Length: 503
Image (cartoon, rainbow, N blue to C red):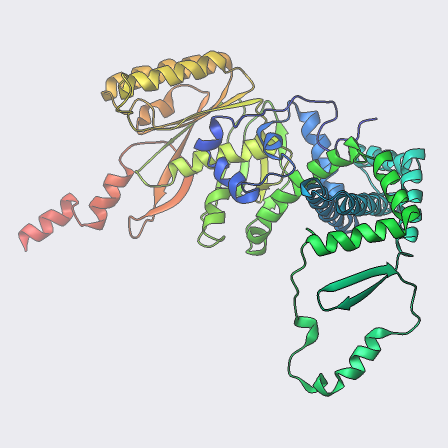
């Protein structure tokens, strides 16, 4: 039975970070979202794109179910409990004292059973629509009723009851401690102690605010006391030892799988929540291998996070059927690279089945993503800038196909314009033959008129101030907009000059 909420069929994961992650700043997203301690190995899940539209739809349906309030609350609690289970197991492995180790192992097993039962109970009582979660619900019900799980729960109850009857009496006389079997005392010693210190009850300090440092590691005195308890209550501690021996690997692979896959979604939702709260839009995108782009009010996710959601300029992008190469031109520092990076992020997140930044989005579904962003020359290498560009572009074209997304940012800037145009046209010809989807940021505006498969987008200026607006609009590229705006701003038009000369 398939219990994955990410994959309708098993899929090999990408273990190493893809090259495009750095160019799209997705490495920064993961660093902030997951951090250095990746306890559930989430990174490979973000590196591995869905292979087809059906896999994306499978995830989107599962994530909709996961966002139901009762399912989300139960799953959040489950992942918190499982994190504590992992912490206790790690602690148990680090301890040298056998009985202390077994005690923490037992507590981890008890919490694990509680977590599984709690999650299963909510799933059984909830209305679910997705194939993924209905399948997981059936598996959880069967697992919670399985002989092994029921026996483990029963033995936990027996061991806990036995340990609950362990009473010790400590006789402390100076540096000597005598340990013996005790018995349950009906008297409430808490009340007795409270009466002794009643005069201090008017103290401004709240005892509940006091924190005591308790270590799981035993000192030599505590070890000796525990050893005496084991000798005095062999049946109780024998039951504990038998339990640990019977269930050395109680963690079920399917349970760990759901924890990991839900954490994949949970980490992303926690990352974007402050941005949603600030008013920035997110949506569930439509995806397709063919067709065009239709994106409304989208933005660079990493840039928005850095700014805390403030001062973000949203952009839209619509292409027509058959247009596969988007050429983005305009003034420097006008937002062109951010626009290209935004489109790359959108397609990547959509291929992961995740909500994307934007009011609405219909996106190209890539099986692979390739990027060529400008790099400085490496003084240690023997290649010049142009040769490095050619080698990198050649490597991309050798691997790309009709299902690839290629992002090119300011290529061939180190050569003459005529040569750069010739090389750019050759690259476009190859991309067009492959049928790949491409976003190309360039100062060579002539490339925007390459063929019917190209669409021109231009970074614009504020009409009144000639300042960069960071809005990218679909319009023909003339290469003169910025110069004309500066002429108007500084009154350098022919009429302006004649008027000043005549005066």
